[in-house]
Length: 362
Ligand SMILES: NC(=O)c1ccc[n+]([C@@H]2O[C@H](COP(=O)([O-])OP(=O)(O)OC[C@H]3O[C@@H](n4cnc5c(N)ncnc54)[C@H](O)[C@@H]3O)[C@@H](O)[C@H]2O)c1
Image (cartoon, rainbow, N blue to C red; front, top):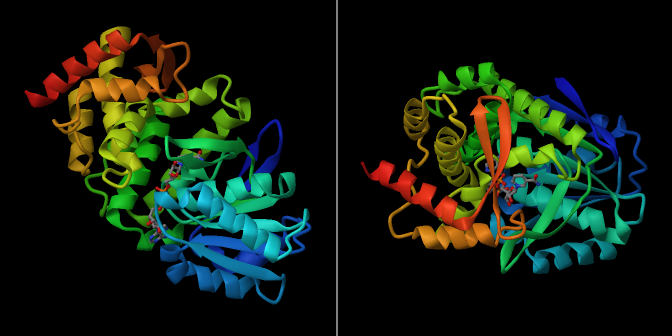
């Protein structure tokens, strides 16, 4: 088992990473010395089948514990599900010294974390991530649910008390979800670590990734996120670097419709566009073509589908919660590991986007 300590202004907490560590969940939780008068284990139906009952049985007997499984997928991050979980928490008589456990991917982590951040003005929670993407979402304390008018619009900053990441759980993750999570690993590498990028570029296919490589990716990805979050917990500065690929990515995700494209596929598109803009605006010397070819070899899309108009994407970007004063903020690179934040007027981005899309059609 490897461990990392996340140091933020509000809290310091451990991230424990290893294959099979979920089987020691009771001991690991005890070692945190939290009051844990009661535990509410929140998971989703898909994860529940594989790991929910197992974790419940490991904890039962040591603590009063109740398990609730929400439907799998993004639609669970809703105000209705949030209310249902609050009701479960009240009926199970959680108190201020109780703890919520989030067992699942980014959806369960965000939802359960938001419940924990607001129940009785905030109680403890521990993340048990089960997707590759959640190496990103489980660390850093951003928790949220969606509003019908936009993703993650209702949320809070609430750091977990620990992250217990059993990488063995990734063995059952569908390839599509693995690819989605790997996009965030690639993002972490591009914004911070050139040698990590070169290691990743050697991967030929998602299926060929070994457990050892996976463990390394998770460890390095979390280390990079930890370094950034520890300097800027509430996204007032460099935490925005983590949005590399996300400005267009979020717009693509919203235009395709959530569920029609994974978050990671949308971010991979966004990173390819950000590299294009980096080349045009900052003279970034990176050879983009081999990177795009490699991403497409791994199964990521190389262009936005034709039926989605550039105007629609711009309009989405203008409505993004990170857009301020009518300017769209982009995370660019002047080389791997060297990030620049750049603000553009909508017309400028429209011009780059049209140019990039034409290049994809060549
Ligand atoms: N809080 C943050 O900082 C942050 C960062 C990035 C993304 N997010 C959020 O994360 C969410 C996406 O997370 P995700 O990609 O993990 O999606 P997810 O939680 O929906 O999981 C993807 C799918 O995989 C299934 N699954 C999970 N673990 C499994 C396993 N081990 N084996 C088999 N199936 C498994 C789930 O049931 C689901 O169907 C989005 O809502 C996004 O907004 C949050």
